[in-house]
Structure formats: structure tokens, C-alpha cells
Length: 247
Image (cartoon, rainbow, N blue to C red; front, side, top):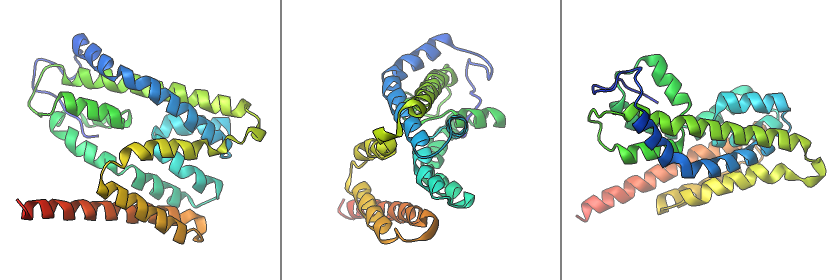
């Protein structure tokens, strides 16, 4: 995330309690679902072979459900560390777009603060912020509103995931909860397939993953993600040009 120091009545280190409270109230309805999803991811990590310590450190450091889930089968298969990192990077490329959208709002913030806010940023929080502040014009309370979204979001995720980690370690293996990660991915995927471009990307990625299943170190998953992304972008670009051509 690229942040910013605002040229408004709010100082860099200032705090606007009204804006913070407004951000918290806007994001509050999402916290319960986020915590529940975190529980599922926590259980999936432990049931995929990670120890309680490894899973706990992973959720605190990575803080990305999609990247955590995508890396689990690679870790279980003993894939090289560069493959795991590359997969997580590809899965999280959407944050480059989020960063570009947020940058005009917080360009003057110190670099460390931008990195720090970027670490605790999440998809829903960024979407809710941009919905509230579509313009990058300086406005009092922006930073506090963003923090009111981000801090509770981070806490809800960590509490949910750590609960899932310790719950998963206590649940007998005979319960076969290893499929929890797959269910979590499906819960993310279905709402996102909202247009033909996304659907084409998903279908192509699915086909490629099946065809490339035999590749070592689960490289088929990484290739499928890349091909699916390129396909979705190409379809979206084609649709855009077609709309322009037809007025």
C-alpha cells in the first residue's frame, strides 16, 4: 500500500476520533465473517501439516488468507521456497492495484508508515475506504477513517485464525478437516466470479491446473494462476475495446 500525509486539518500523527469511529462502524459488519473465515484458514493450516507455532507465525507475518491457502499444498508437497513465494506473490498481485488507488490519498506519509499500513490492509477495508473517499482531494479524517477500518480488520483476522489454529490442533485427524482450505477458497471464489472475464479466467485456470497436474513441486498451480490472470485481463480488454467500438 502506498500511503500519504494529508494536507488537511489532520496531522500525520494526529487522530480524529470521530473519523476513526466512523471507519470502525462502517467495517463492523464485515468483522464477524472475516473472523469465521480466519477460523477455517487456521484449521486448514494445521491440518495441512504445519505445527501450531508455524501456523501462528505464518498468519501473523503473512496476513493474507488467499496467499496462506495457496501456499499450503506447496508446503505439504515439499516445494522449493521460491515456488511458494512466487505463488503467494501472484495471488497477491491485486494489492498492486489497491496500492495505486490509495497512493493519491496518502502520498506524503513517511515510507515506514506506508509500509506499516500496507501490511495491515485488506481487500474489504480498502474497498470500503475508496467507497467513502472516491476523490483524492485532501480531507480531514481520511487517515483516521482508514485506521478505523484496518485495525479491527487485522485483529478480527488474527483472533479468528489463531482460534482455528489451536482448534485444529485439538480436533482429531479422523474428523478429516483437511478439506477446510478448499472450502475456504470456494467461499472466496464464487462471489468474485461476477462477470464473463473472471469466469473465463477461472475456467482456463481450472483446465490448465488439471493438465499441468503432473508437474513437480505443484508448479501446475502457479502456471494455472498466471494463465488464468492473463486470460481474464485479455477478455476484459477485448470487452472494453468492443464497447468503445460500438459507442
